[in-house]
Amino acid sequence: MSGIVTSDTHAENRQREDICFWAGSLFARGLTGGASGNISARTADGGLLVTPTGSSFGRLDPARLSRLDAAGALVSGDRPTKEMPLHSAFHDTRAGVGAVVHLHSTHAVALSMLPVDDPDDFLPPLTPYALMRLGKVRLLPFFVPGDAGMGEAVRGLGGKRSAVMLANHGPVVASKDIEAAVFAMEELEETAKLALLLRGTGALGLDAGQVRAVVDKFDVEWDG
Ligand SMILES: O=C(O)[C@@H](O)C(=O)COP(=O)(O)O
Ligand SMILES: [Zn+2]
Image (tube, rainbow, N blue to C red; front, side, top):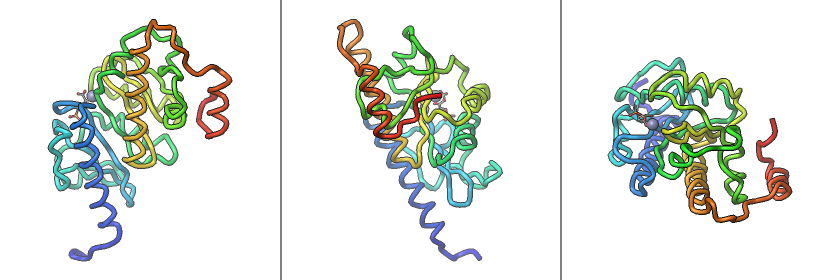
């Protein structure tokens, strides 16, 4: 059946373009540098499109993205990111996940190195939009990059969190598609930046009542 262009082919080509567009945008804005970061997106047939290991977000080629089948086997493109266990854990355990983004964004990484009151709620509640996009963000311990333990830690969350922070490494966000995951990631980084800017100033974040009002109104995953 080669040569037949289906709507799935169009959708996949669009996903390839989206991954490269958003990766380039993140790179251009300094949200991840060098060959850091990785992205995966679920395809219509249950497979994945993934950024190749060692590739730079600034120079991705849509045709060279790693294409995995539904069983996780590489069917075309370059070798996928070494963080496949991390990405697969989100895709496998969380309902409605269409894309996962991992970056080395500066402020989030800096915040992960400071003491935190509650590792299950790593980001302080400062603005409503961060709550709406992210819910609670779980701080995970340090793992050596590529360690399958990261995937196991995410699986241990039972699909209850859309975002985690890898200590001394970088944030990871899952959402329904690549654009939504990038928007949530931008909120995570901006909130970490605010937290660092405001540290020690006595600035007021959202109080418990304000957090509850946002959580209830926008159906944020918060309790449990
Ligand atoms: O920090 C790392 O080494 C990885 O988590 C990463 O960001 C880039 O690894 P690849 O996706 O395998 O290039
Ligand atoms: Zn990384």
